[in-house]
Image 1 (cartoon, rainbow, N blue to C red):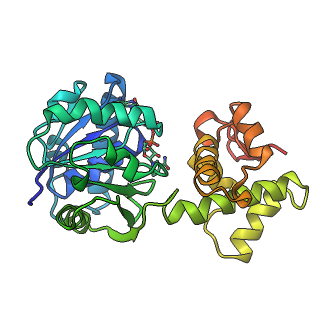
Image 2 (tube, helix red, strand yellow; image 1 turned 90 degrees about the vertical axis):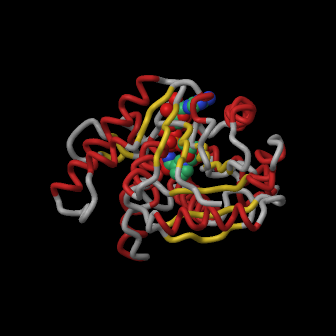
Length: 291
Ligand code: NAD
């Protein structure tokens, strides 16, 4: 099946980036969100990003304005039904995702492919509620989408070879590099990355090292571009905790126990950069460690 029209459900950080890279690659995109304000922000963010990329000469041979013009925004989910491919990138809550697919299914055109950008929820379980689980799979972009090269492709137990091949072709047309992950909690990247971050929080919790020393250790000692606590603040501590909980519940191994200090920060509403405070405080110009 050839894909030309794509619906992106959820216009947050991920949905906005996904719509942007699709439009640059020449796809016709319908971006939808329950929040009209989120759609407005998304569109102005894409316009600003593309203008900046054109200015820096990074969009050789691509008309930035025409790319923005390929993104239509809609609040009503029913309006996205005629698309060849749906990429669900709404809030990471299973009940929300089930409701989106339930509401979408009656409006889909025959043969449409459904995908989810979920970081951790079972693709097989999401697919199981739809009438054609063979046409459902995981399509997991990394944040920020326009910058990060990798995309994880996740087959549910019923995903057909045709579905996989059609989605694989989209990833190639975006100029991204696909890796194939089995449908197990948190797939590959987050299965490795988030327990490492959780361990860094245990190291802090047990007083083995300070925030700055932990981050410097991994930057200078393991050549990581960002320290694990700095990175946790960038991802969002609530997201990190939610992925640890999925690993803990899904794999039932005590090594995935979320660090109590991570739980405490989330309970305090200190979620990282997005709330202005996490392991670092971002109120002043240079981030200040909070412990
Ligand atoms: P976000 O909070 O920035 O955006 C979520 C958007 O979904 C919001 O604009 C919200 O209004 C919208 N939404 C909620 N319910 C909806 C509904 N019923 N219909 C349509 N829109 C709805 O979240 P995000 O960081 O963009 O994450 C989105 C998805 O991408 C999640 O599944 C997350 O796990 C995954 N993801 C996130 C990252 C990351 O680093 N943030 C990385 C990879 C994958």
